[in-house]
Amino acid sequence: MDLMDFDHGIVNTGFPLMARRLAISQDYDAFIFRKFDRLSARNLLYQESRLACLEQRLEQADAQAAAQAKEELASLPRGEGSETLRSIRAYETFEKNSKDTMRTEHVRKALCDDIERTLKDYRMGSPRDDRSGPG
Image 1 (spheres, helix red, strand yellow):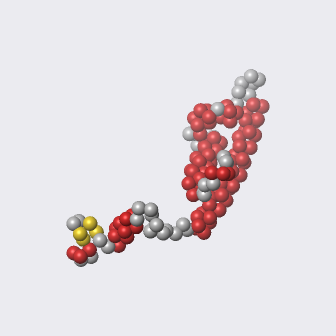
Image 2: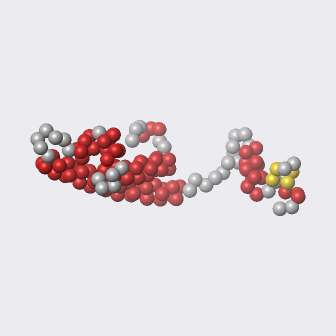
Image 3: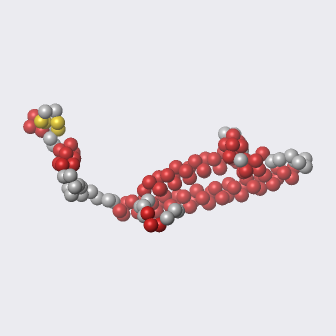
């Protein structure tokens, strides 16, 4: 850059100059940007595939937890409850038990957290259509 590229401390070249020129238009006619539709669609397809895998893994972990709760109930004296069953029914218990790396809740919580992050990314990148309703 030489001194001709500066005007009162403002950079008059490259991205700063281009951004200023694009922003001059009050009706934003000059705003011509690529939407990267193909890349966006591909990214959404990968995220959908990832979510489907995570969903399957969570269903398997849920089935494992249900089997574990059934075993616990069978081995406990009548009237005593299963800790795993309490975790299935109450989030507070689930969250507390998920901190123990030896419990099945630990794996299920990690899956739930991963699903939450992936869904957030997926929703941020998916096209919106106000006519489609909730979903």
